[in-house]
Length: 188
Image 1 (spheres, rainbow, N blue to C red):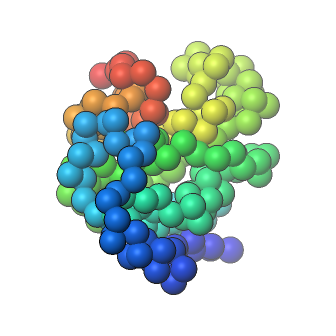
Image 2 (image 1 turned 90 degrees about the vertical axis):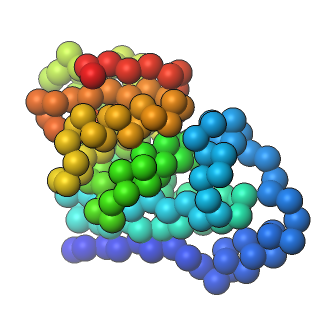
């Protein structure tokens, strides 16, 4: 079964357009320099080969996050092994969205891993040295992403240009880890 999640709700748009009459409220994500002038609309596009689901949603309009859209992002990025949902940190979504925009592509990301329950993280750690014991995936603050049209190096360069979190390059597995933790890079 293929499930497509698309969010531009009437209520969300009306609320966002009403908000244009006032100055954009400051948010914690505006601390990221790459978001200054990032535009009035932010979108995230992903699909999951594991669940068959697709996500193409506008989650920010004119200085405001759209809570319903972020809820859909959290559901989409759930631990597919346990079906557990955790709120995904909007800063991680911002980084992925900004990197996508910098690459100037229309192809959606393939989501390999978003939220990971502690059980899933422990299972993956038992199989790979590359899985952190206190992974930001368990906090809903990281995403492992792939693009068919861009190399790991190109994706990592775009994410690094945001200067707003961790960027890990996994050439052998063909994906890039993006998170909203401290600015750092590895394998790249």
